[in-house]
Image (cartoon, rainbow, N blue to C red; front, side):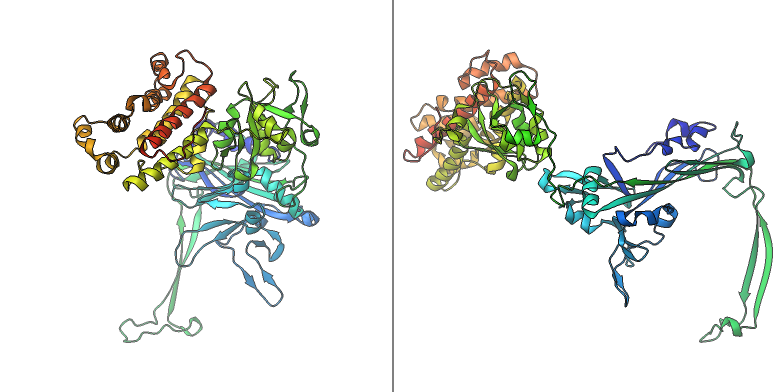
Length: 603
């Protein structure tokens, strides 16, 4: 952290008087410190002109609400731990778990300190009942919640030397835990600020001191002269020098007598005066105390029912919105812009599965998917009462792209949910996925080596290859880049030349053919229209450059290779066609090498 300008002023009174620390509050904070021991910054050398230092220490304690009154007069000095480790121990009376305060297991430090006699680095460990209660998973220096789309709940910050400096927790999750625990969090802090100069002008504190009490703490500041190096100006130190003369180092086995029996001792005393040029130190100490209150309900640990406040539009005037129980009771569908689909599958656990050409399931994680349909306008439909069953954080992802009803209900979703007659269509995305796998298996069976180096996993494929790159031409080109990456770039030229089509290897190598031209040659020599078969692959290869280069008008010249007009603007439809054409190309290749293989075709 860089020092603020106020700290670097010749007389940094505003910084020293620390009014900014008086305004610290946690009632609206997103993150709450559970422990901190950090030198925020230091410039110059301690005790010398130009020195500035700011350090802070925060210690917290989980206090049951029933015992809160016992901590009315306790502060940082009585809560802070002086030792370097928290142990587990027992006596004849009871067992003491790690992190208990003042030998009382009712009061727990949320951060357990560990040190090791063997020299390993110190560790700060999140109290297990918090970690397990909130179902957190530690990944390095962060704790995520897998059931909430891997949201970061706790983070550990380190100093430059990699030692722990601060551990913070997301307030929403902390308050959930406190509610279930029927407790509050006592947050105590100690802050130190120091400045050294030859002199500070305009400091008019009586006796060089200033004290102030404020709502959440107190401040004690001083202005005093020092010698260069940091010793109090004019300070004298009395030194006592004591020694023994009873040990003879020339003996083979020297012995040290007990002090009470040692008669050969000596002692001398003298005084040492502090020296060095006169400087002045301006410093302040601040002690703070806050309470973080529990939430009213605990949906995570205690499984309390909490009604969602996320509103959804239910009429075409953009005025009728419902949330929570009303959303559950509303017997209708909701409409969403297709951009929501990329947001839902953009996280680490997002999932998309196709049922028919226009229906499937999608969600930010496998256990939070909704049955959706795509209507004639390209908008997404889902049932309102299904949406109401999602946790609030998942509803918020959907709500950002909620829109007024337009284009009616998806025909294929209606066929499935109302008529109980699911459409017999297949999504181009699913057809392409099946054809890639079938072609891979067939080429390996027939030629002993597969056509593709590797295929992506099913989840990865469907979250990367889909029609919802539909907000711009650049996004459509991004889809083409993904198609090229998973299909054409994976074609194994070595397998083509050595196993699949060795008779044309010499011609291919002489012409230095890449994947698409090599497949063209293979199919052509086998008696098929290789150029037509690979036309879609070539179009995708041209268009893949559009996500990184602003040459849209030139790139549009390649759209007809996919059967798309050059002036097309319906990007969702364009994506659908591009995926379908690549899938058909692979199906034709598959039929050319194995007529009996059952490949997928789309209309």
